[in-house]
Length: 213
Image (tube, rainbow, N blue to C red; front, side):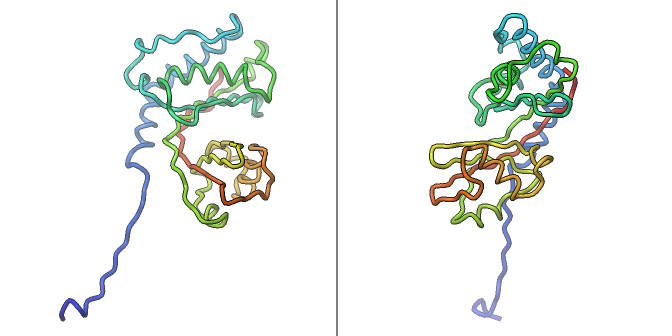
């Protein structure tokens, strides 16, 4: 028939940049050992000198000179012992890993500085973050519906307070209510807090973990 009698249907899908996480997995497979060694060197330098090592960025492979954001997480006997990181990329990947490893070991305000006798029971992981994506929603229900358990890291911000959880936190807080309640409390907000000014970003992360230091 004529075009006025035709019914058409369309479907659209929105996806992360193709291959982004696969590229990060390849990067960690190729350079993970060097990153772990550099993180370990930051700890040993901190114990010996009370300061992180200087990083000669130009001496590292091109992939490690790219600006990337990372988190370093330490666990002692499977319990959190320190976690510090960068939400957005602002320095070379190798520099970020070294700086965050030192900070997670000695500057995390939740824990005392790391001591040498803890090294044997310590594991560390490196998380390579994707670019945060600002989420859009009209209310809390719309926000919660968009969250992907097990996949999304979240950054929330409201009333001058901010907090972040890596995707791996879903392993300990597997439901959306648990995850969001603890994230809000980490930000210093009430567990049931909501306001029109509430903002959130989500991101993916590719992790290299765990390994003995």
